[in-house]
Length: 316
Image 1 (cartoon, rainbow, N blue to C red):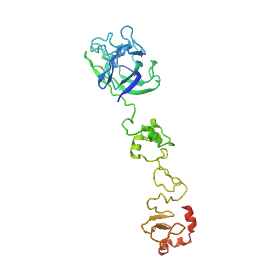
Image 2 (image 1 turned 120 degrees about the vertical axis):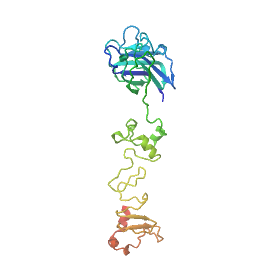
Image 3 (image 1 turned 90 degrees about the horizontal axis):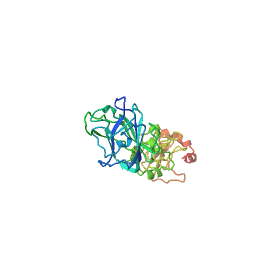
Image 4 (image 1 turned 90 degrees about the vertical axis):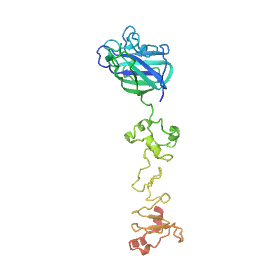
């Protein structure tokens, strides 16, 4: 993937063991595998420290300089003994797009490779960043690298390392329109940042959830699995059954061991229920809205005769 930045910030924790200096020969940006030409008039550079003389920080980014032979005039080097907690920043004159970074770590004719930078974090920002304090806050930034630069091999060569950069979004390859998706959850709390980390803090994993529940209206917080008063959960979208024992309109199958057992047009008397209602059995349906089928023929239902049908219907 590509990145577009006004500034690129390197926070360098340490080097490969030297007690004298920290040194980088070149930092090269690429696009589709091709190096982007950079000369020192196309950008500004800032560093926590630099050695006096021809070791200016801009030299690490100028692609016209050689990556081999002596480091003199061809690399950035920290001031003496400042070997940890260094920040190096490039600010492009105009925003630059790139998809790769190549490092040629510190060396001089293949020697002094222990000067090279080791543990490094790289951020990009859409702002012009000039604060060279190590690990200082960076406005409008994204981390694209957090790892180790290889120590240059002990040879007078361009020992390039292509960095493995961090993708800036975990949703890039998802077939999802974030704006449209959010419109389906108008009243649902959603934390995109937390969601990217797969249900951290019991939130919502967007990728897994959206693929399995596409176009289903849902309450992201309750996740459609809430049971109110331990009554009935039909698991139909975000519909919640709240204060009634049964929602006949949404019932799709037999509900066992509750006050009413709905048997849709199958003519079966369910013995484990207090009462069975059969709809569509060919008998006249009265204005009370149900037809009792042969209740008196089943001993376990004798006690039902005393029930007040009006109150049952009202409860439904």
